[in-house]
Amino acid sequence: MYRVFLYDGTFEGFLTCAERILSVDIDIEKLRIENKSTYQPMFFDTAVFVNANKGISNMLKERIIKKADKNTFKKIYYCFLSEVQNKEMYIYKYIKLVLKQGKKVKYFYHDDVVNFVEKVSKSVSREIGKYMGLMRFNESEDGLLYAQFEPVNDILVPISYFFRGRLANFRWIIHDKKRGKLSFYENGRIRFLKKADLKTAFSNEDLLYQNLWKTYFKTMTIEERKNLKLQRQNMPKKYWKYLTEKK
Image (cartoon, helix red, strand yellow):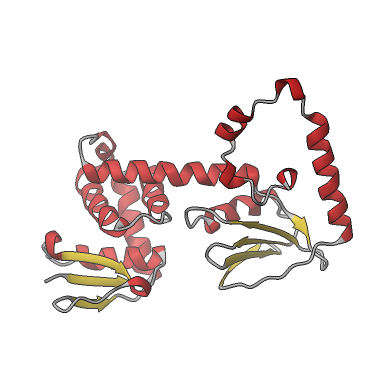
C-alpha cells in the first residue's frame, strides 16, 4: 500500500507537496508523488491532495538555496519541466539529499538520483538554449508578434521570460502547440494561458518579411560549403517545423 500525495501539476504545487512530506515521517519506499490530472487510483492506495501554497513553496526554495546554491535549485526546476516519467520521486529524493548534504551533492556521481537530475536538467537546459536562438516570430494582422513551437519539455515559462528581456517594447504571444498553452506579453507583464486555440493569419507585410528572410538565407548559402550533416548536428530536424528559412 502506498501513501500518494497529489499536486496540481505546477512547480509551486509540487514544492508545497514536497515540503508537506518532509515535515512528516514517511517510509520513502511506500511513498508516491503524482500529478492529480494523470493519477490512476489503485485499490490499496491512500491518496491526499495538497493545495499549492506560494508561501510554503518559497520557504522550501529558500532552504534549498541556503543549503546549496541557486544553480542547484535551477537543476531541480529544469528537471521538473521535463516530461520524464516518475520525475517527482527522483526530485523529491534529490531535495532530501541536498538538504542533508548541501552543494556536495553534485559530486555524488555514483548516486542514481543525482545522475537522473543532472542528466535530465541538462537535457532541458539544452532545449531551452536551442529555442532561444531558433524561435521565429511573425506579425499577426492585429500587430502582435506571434511564435509557435512544439518543445519536448514544458519550457514555455523560461522561454517567455527570456524573450521578455529581448522584446520588451513589443506585444507578443508564444504558443506551445503541443500542450495548448501560451504566454502573452504586454507592457512588461507576461500572462500564461492554457488550452489556447489561436488561428492567427499573417499580415501581408509579414509574408513579405518571410520571403525576404528565405531569399537572404538562400543567397548567403555557399553551395560548395554546404554541410547538411553538420547542419543537422547543430540544429536537429525536429526544430525545423516553424523556421521560416525551412518552409
